[in-house]
Image (cartoon, rainbow, N blue to C red):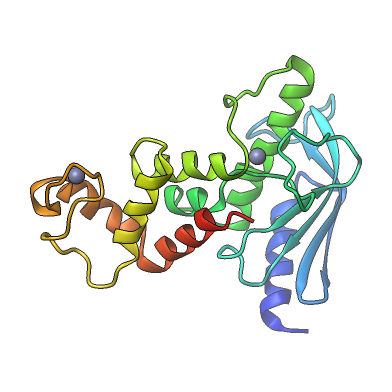
Length: 220
Ligand SMILES: [Zn+2]
Ligand SMILES: [Zn+2]
């Protein structure tokens, strides 16, 4: 067994050991699999005496290249109907992975389970009880990607503008003040959004910009 895979398995086991007694972790092929019942607990607290807010049957597959590769999350108990943030391949739509990578600094397994993973099942539970999404009605699919990337870039959710910005970040040798500003107002970068772009540049490196471009141009 590869030590990288086994190291990841141990890390995941440690994260889940305290408050997720019904999830088991194993190495399957070249991935780490988490399977069982996920207890949606109150935030930041030990398992409550009255039990979890909800329970979901799940299967999660971690690639050894985590966090660069997004884990695949499946709800296996049939509790989530089509149209409520399931992807075409039946995985749970936990939001736009690149947004989490760029906006959050902690990408540990622990941060994943406490963040996008928990938020997903919390949202589903809230929707089931109240018929509305607690974090607002986020668009799904390509529209959701455009909205997420625009938020990362701090611009309007316009696909063309998002792509123009990402193309600037994907170019090696940036920044070049004489390039036209991707905001599209006709000025050069040095006379326009120079500071905003320079600040984002440290968060969105060329490899990440290329990855985002690829995804927005062929979302699935
Ligand atoms: Zn979705
Ligand atoms: Zn500009």
